[in-house]
Length: 114
Image 1 (cartoon, one colour):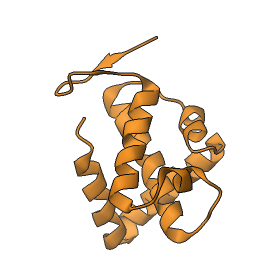
Image 2: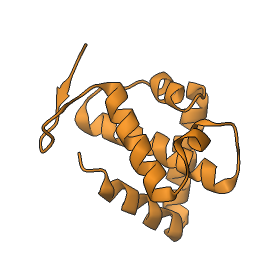
Image 3: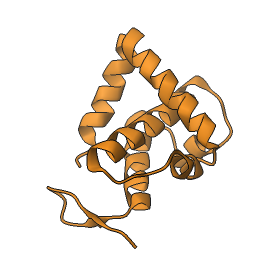
Image 4: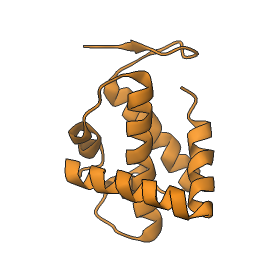
């Protein structure tokens, strides 16, 4: 099993552990339960939390050079890799056009201490 030692964190993180950590922080910050984020519900707030999770997972994966696939991110939320691509693209669009969305995203990103 591959582990990554991340500066500032004493524990070794696996890819799955990183995804779970991001999921927990997104859940805590948005007030949406993890089961709801992983579920089939398409209410706006739940979809937004899912988009945050997908985008942040890919952002930190690239920053930490952990090589987490879109399929792996999708499995974490019980979705297909194409859903992850769509969520990342929608998040990018909203970050450019919606100030409130960007503000909430930045708050969550700031609270992920990696």
